[in-house]
Image 1 (cartoon, rainbow, N blue to C red):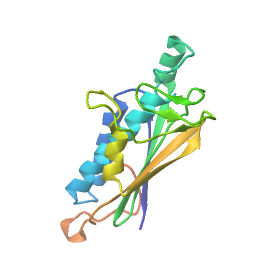
Image 2: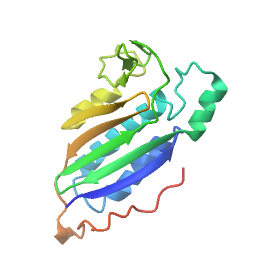
Image 3: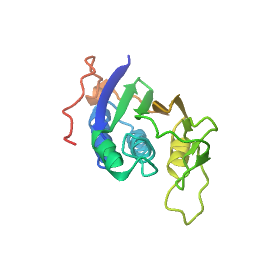
Length: 186
């Protein structure tokens, strides 16, 4: 049995917290493995934050088109979150709106692009005093595997985590509807 839950969040910083809360509402009645729930919350937080910070989903600070346009994208930007639940796996997929067109190099926050300008998240080893650059290292540690696919028009980062299935005796049997709980307001 596989359940799929989908939600779109606005391109604002608070969306990372709203995404965590939404996922917690979904996972808590279905999964009794508190460690897996906590790991999933952290992975979601990191991936949504990266999508908002490094892409046009949240009006990337590296945008060279001008502040007003970047602010407008932050208002109109979106991040899509999908959760797939199976009896032993949680798959998290975060899809962004793409990146501002650039060529080769990296930003001060460690995101990087290949020579064709295609974005691709890379795990970095930041300086110990750096304020940014550890999120994907956490995802890499917590997920059994993670990968990304896409291009400048949008990228999906996927992370697979495992969990111990909930026992039906504990009243946490999965539903067959796949209906999401009431969404939190953005």
